[in-house]
Image (spheres, rainbow, N blue to C red):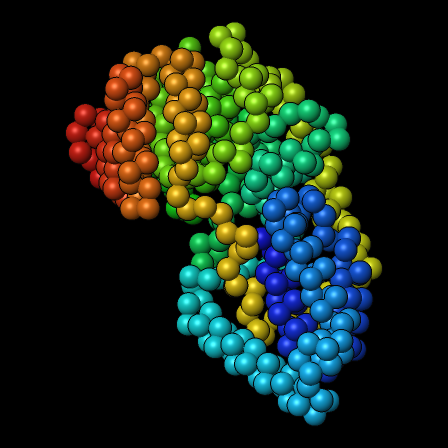
Length: 424
């Protein structure tokens, strides 16, 4: 939700500056009224703490600037009314040219910066609910980040979920032409439910390398190699989440092989994710984590209740928001850089946490049944090579790969013992 709200707020702030430079107080007052109506949509649930601080700082900085416009004119700039009016028009013209230039840039990169509106997302879920869901199912969800899911559950459960709702349709991603969605199994993963009953199977864990495809990489392996594969991977998943999934859902007695895919996303910013109280529930020798299997049905009921309420929620201010969106949408500021921007380089603390979690994963699993595949990227090559060396020094099987296709080939080669191409 935050990634949809932030561009709107940034766009509104920039345009309020431009309009105020030409029209003055009436536009600032209009903007303030919209902000008051909009406050029900701005909450800590919709923002990370850093994003919330950034947004409030912008608002609290610019409003006093508008209120003291005349004071700045006379006491600071010492301009008469005529010259100050000209200065405002010049500022407005510069901003207008900037907006138009940026809009042209966005249009020329429309595929790269495709912006999917929240209304499209919601309507797609409604279509799935009406046309795709069997009578015994009543769930359809957007692919939701687990920290957001935890906030939804906090009132009733002291848990951190690591899977989607069970037996549900999940709206996963937009491939540029259509929405990709899939059905979840009994534990909320992208598998045929009957696979869990197989006596022996391969577990695929870590980063999802399906690349917004209608068929997951685990399905490709099964179809081409005739093996049973349970897919526990996730999009942009950090190594802590992967570890939690292993403890909660991986069946060691039925595991023939455990393939763990890691990349820069497995370690990037995990310092911000670290929660000692939560991790302590997983790292002792007799740990069963949070026992998520036992309370999965209760978690699913609460998520279903929450999303059904959201889908049926009547918003009395909807017409105002529609006008507001139509007024500002031509400028394309929704594609402005997502602020605040997160680090793209793995820090030393991220590395140390990552090594610790990798050690715990090996402690939990049979080392002989585990192999890690590392997707090396140019921005974090040094750090990922350090991770690879660390695992090799500790006797952990690991293979490096350059690019998704190279990763796929190496995984297939490891399973079969020979090179084999997967047909997508």
